[in-house]
Amino acid sequence: MSVVIVDGSTVRDFVGDDEAFNKSVDARFASLDLNGDGVLSRAELRRALETFRLTEADFGVDAITPPGEIAFLYDSIFDQFDLDGSGTIDLLEFRSEMKKILLAVADGLGSSPVQIALEEDPDGGQNFLRQAADLEAAKLAEGSKTNHN
Ligand SMILES: [Ca+2]
Image (cartoon, rainbow, N blue to C red; front, side, top):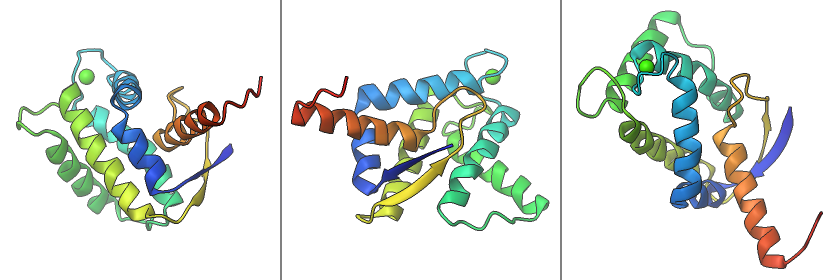
């Protein structure tokens, strides 16, 4: 487990950096596409949402939700991702919705930096907030011309 400090602008900068953001989201998409058919099914998204719950807990969202409501929640989130109603989520839909979600997280954070404890991602993927913090740190290091190596 590690601790990162992020605020709204950290997340917004990450989302605004197309190269870093798309690379990160594309990697996550690939790791979620368990059967490798290039789209996410309901079951695959459900698994993704279960990993996101870690982040919800970090932001103080009540994690105790009755199972029936969770199933309903997952369905409604799937429908939100599935913009064209095809029954699967493609990469562009996933990018677009992740962008919205992360911008909402940024709004929630506002300008107050928060410390977030991150578990290592068992899928081998990296947490988006961690990547946002890493990107900001890299830019700061670049700006100050400080060599830490
Ligand atoms: Ca799939």
